[in-house]
Every structure is written in structure tokens, then in C-alpha cells.
Length: 341
Ligand code: DAH
Image (tube, rainbow, N blue to C red; front, side, top):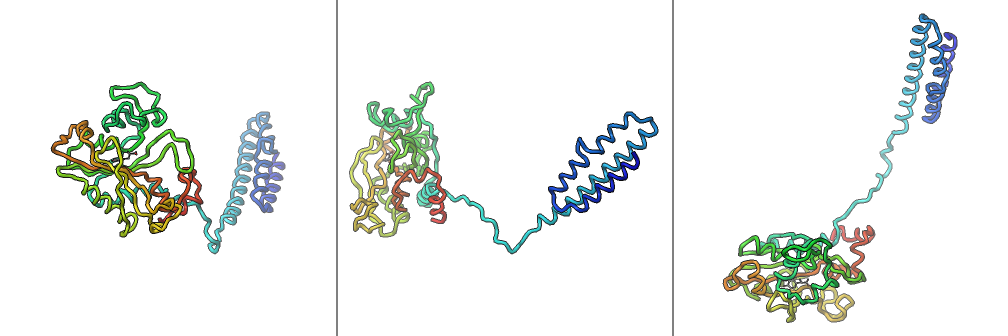
């Protein structure tokens, strides 16, 4: 036994000394310390020995095992140091950096202009009920926008304020704020909206709007025009023109749709403005007295204006993007182009 232990020790240390790779070391570890190793076999003979030898050889075998393990670890350490050597002259490894999404950037840029005017930001909820999304906004029961073809209804039990749904516009933010806070109010409310539209280059079942409104005594249409012109001058260009076209919305009276002069072709006609020179950007008007009344704000004392714009469309026009689906495909080659816009 004594001779055997000596022989194993010499052979093992010799082989470890000559080993040149981490892989060889691991092979030696298995060979000398593994379950089927010679050392394991010697250990298995110990129970058969008389008690004096048991103590002696048990101890010697443990020392042998320890010696080999230490030699293996030390040798591994020398490889480690070699393998981890860093070449500081190499170019740094590149890594993929995320960017702010172009729609987040656009939403923030729009809100910022109104915030600078003193508007506060209110982010509503994406799940609404019929009262907030329609009734309180003076949208009659028979209005087509209430149809399941135009609104996603949720499959949950109906409550006192009607069915639950995914909001189809950000206008219900007006109701939430006016129920909670008293005038004077100047609020801007960005967020996602949902409509069961078939997805194509200009439609998505989810898109983004920014709603704005202002309520106080003596508010009139000129205030609305002034605020929107200020917005357009800052967002597009100081020489932009606005065109108000009479329109109908149930929640405003009078109502208008607003076009900006095309800043891409300067009204010479291009594909972005469909050769018209004008681009529609938003709907607006004076808040209907019924809407103020639904929120317990006295329409005889207070007036307000409101507007709502589509963020996706504004970003598409500003950057000449011809397919709304590009916003939602998460292709970094597309998104990276708007890193610094
Ligand atoms: N809610 C309208 C829509 O989704 C947009 C809108 C139009 C909002 C006129 C308004 C408004 O506040 O006054 O199409």
C-alpha cells in the first residue's frame, strides 16, 4: 500500500506538471480523484484492514488526495491567468443600445409645448366604461361609434355605468378630470386608444392620441385658435399656417377639423399631403354644455375648448413614414433612425 501511494503521487504530480491545457487538467482530475480512480479503489480496501493500518493508510490516502487536488487547482490557476489576459488595444465589443421609441418622442414633444403654456398632464386609463367613453361626452346611444365594429367591448359583467371597453379615444380623460377637479383647468392627456380596425398601412387596432382641453370663465374660440397656432408654430415651423374647417363632433359645439400647411413641400404638393398642400392634424371645438353638465360644472358660468390629435399620424407626416405598422414591428433598423430626432 505504501509503495502504491508513493507511486500514484509521483505519477500524478508529474502529469499535472506537464499538462498544458485546462482540458487535460480536468481529465487528470477525473482519472486521479474520480469515483473509479485508483485512489478510490485503495480507499475501498481500508475497511478490510486491521485497526492500526486503517488509521495509518486512511490518513495517508487523504493526504494524497489533498496533495493532488491542490496541485490540480494551482495548475488551473496558471491557465486562468493566461486565458483572462486582456488585450487593451482591441476595439471594444459593440453592444445593442435601445432608443426612445419615435412615438414616445413625438408624444413628449407635443405635450411639452402645452406644458410650457401651463397645461398639466393627466394620463387616463385604457379600460373605460360606456358612460365615460360615450354618454358623458354627449355621444347618443344610437351613435355608430358605440357599435362593436368600432369599439372593443370587454367580456366582463356590465356595471351601473354600462359595459367595460378599451377606450376608443382619449376624450374620456376630460370627464375624469372635470369630475375630480374644478375650473380653471388646462390639461393635456396622452395615451393609447383602441379600435377594431383592419390593420393596413394607415390603420392599426391600437394607436395614440393626445387630448387637450381648457375650462374657465370667458373662454372662447379665439383662445382655442391661439393655443393651436402656438402649438403648430413650435411643433412644425414659425411660418406654418392653420386652416379651420367646420365639422361635427358630439362633444363640442361648434366643432372644427384643423389642417396645417404642408411643411414638407411648402404647399407645392407632395405625396405626404396628397398634392393638397394641407394636412389634417386634429379635431377640436368648444366643449358642449352637456359635457360640462355631466361633470357638474355649470355651463352658464364656465366654457371650455377641447382638441384631440393622432400621434401616429402626426409622426408619420413629420418623418415621411408611409406605413403605421412600422411603429409596432420593433425592427431596430427602423427605430434607430429616430434616436436623436
Ligand atoms: N375624440 C376625437 C376622435 O377620436 C378627437 C377629438 C375631436 C377630440 C374633437 C376632441 C375634440 O377633444 O374637441 O376622433
